Image 1: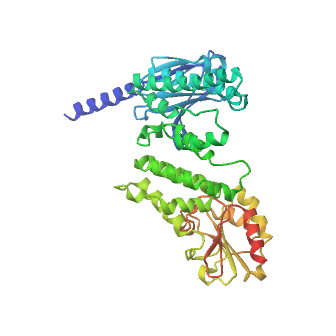
Image 2 (image 1 turned 180 degrees about the horizontal axis):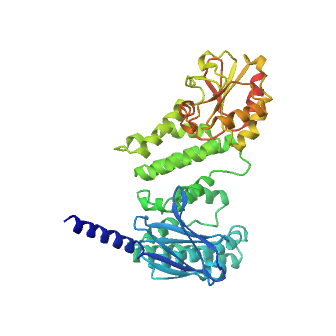
Image 3 (image 1 turned 45 degrees about the vertical axis):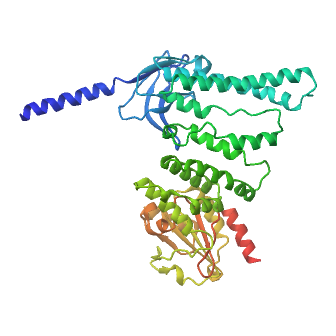
Length: 457
C-alpha cells in the first residue's frame, strides 16, 4: 500500500508539472533579437516581475503561466523598453506586435479578451487624438460660421463612437475580464463647446459614472490608480501652493472614499493608496483628515492587512501635530541612558536616519550646522538609527562628527522607537516643544530649517 501510494503521489506531481506548462503566452516582436523580456503582473498598487525569458533571432519568446497566477492585466516588457499590456484569463494565446513593438500592428490569436480590449483601446486612442485637434475649434471658432457646425457635430460623433463601442463590447461579451476594464476606461461624454472651467465642473460630477466600486477585478490592473490620479488632477490648478493644493484635495478625497465604501477591498486599497501618496507629498493635514474620517473599522471581520492599515491610521492620529510625543527610554551608543521626557530643552528634534540612506547623508551634515552642544538646552537633537549593523552607524557618526545623542537599537525597521513613531522612511523628523508636544513633522531639511528660523524670531 505504501509503494502504491508513493507511485500515485509521484504521478500527481509529474502531471501537475505538465499541466503547469500547458498554459503559455507566445509572442513575437519583429526586429528584437536576443533581447531580455520580463513578464509583470499588474495590480492597482503597482507591478511585480514574475518571470523572464529572451527573444530568439526572430523576436519570438514564450512565457509559461503558473496555475496559481491570478487572472487580470499583465505586461510584457523588453530590456530595450518595449511595453505591451495584455489580459490573462487562464488560457493560452499568442500575439504578434508590429516591427520594434509598434502596437498599431499588434494582433492576437486565440484570445477574444485581448482582441476586443486592444480594439477598444485603439479606437479610443485614435478618437482622443481627433478630439484634441477639434476641441480648440469647437471652443474658440465663431459660432455663426458654417465650419463651426461641422466641427461640433464631428467632435460629438467621435465621442459617441467610443461610448457606443464600449457599450456594444460590454453587452456582447459580458463574461470577459475585458468587459470590466473597458467599462472603466470608457470616457464620459462632455459638451466641448463649454468653457474649460465649465467642462471641469461637469467632468468632476461625471468622472466615475462608468466605474463600479464593487468590482474587485479592477484591482488586478493599474487602470484604477490611473483613474484616481486623473480625478485628483481635476482639482489642482496651476500655480497652487502646497497648502492650497492640500486643501483642494479634501473634497475629492472624501468623494472617493464615500464611493469606495460599498466594498471593503476597494475601500482599503484607495484608503492605503491615498495615505501613502499624500505622506510622500508631505500633506500631513490631509493624511490626518483621512485617518480621522475613515470607516475601515465598520467593515465586518478582521485580516492581517486590515489590522496593519488600521494600526497605521491610529498612529497617524496619535502622532498628529499637537499630540504628546510617545515617551521612550534608551541607551545611546556611548552607553548613556536617555529618557525623552527628562530632556530639558526649549525644542527637541527627533531625527530617524540610517547610514545607508543617501538623503540622510545629504541632510544630517546640514542639521549639524544647526546644533550647538553647549546650547542644547535651546535645541536638543536626538538621532535614532534604523540600521541593523553597528559598524556603519559608528563610522558615519565618527566621520561626520555628530555630537548629539545617538541611539541605535540595531533591529532595523523593527527597532522599538522607530516602531513607536511609525517610521517607514528616512530621514523622518519630529519637532517637539519643551513639554514634548509635537509642533511639526517637517518633510525635509529645508522645511525644518524654515520652522526653526521662525521659532527663533
